[in-house]
Amino acid sequence: MFSFKKHLPLLFLLLAIALSSCDGRDKKHRTTQQDLIENKALDTFSDVVTYFPEKYTQVVTDTILSNGFEVKINTSTDMKNSVLNAFKVDTTNHKHYYRDLISKIEVSKNGQIILSEVIGKPFFLKFDNTLEDYFKISNLTGVWLDEKSALTKDEIFIYILFNKPETDYSYLYKMIINNQGEYSIKEIEEVD
Image 1: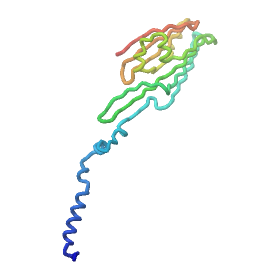
Image 2: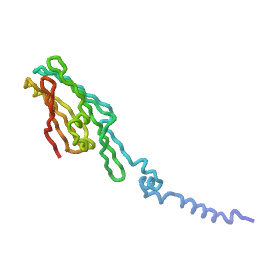
Image 3: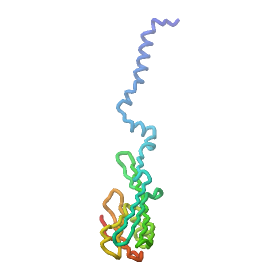
Image 4: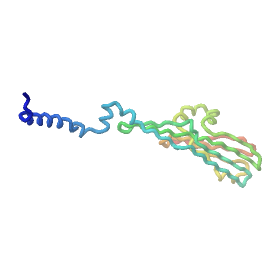
């Protein structure tokens, strides 16, 4: 018959071999990234998505000038439209979405509204459809009143800036508005 005492050393030897082969030494020097690649789970962790700004923002300025003009600029985040800047660092895909801005401008002269416009990409494309390709990679980043324009009685200046995110490539425009609410737009600067 089977003698337990006789085969006990052999049984301990087999048990020791079995336990030592399961100690995980082969995985000790592996990275988490290698395990994720092996299990085909890396793709679920390799995208980092960031929005700028993260939340809806709104800035309202209401300026009364000494030359009789009153300018209201309401700038808010366009939560539906953004520009994507995608890049890869090591094995991580980064996606930065830069949200567009929309500015509503209302200009009054001596208490009478003479101009009301929504400033954004569609507004500029009405005048210059050659900007369409540039607008795919850039966004509206600022609209502001030049308060020095209050020194003249007949007109005011509003500056409008479009910028390609994470670059210095931009277009700056000057909107010149006269007493009757008529306006013209001139490109001030293009920076590469």
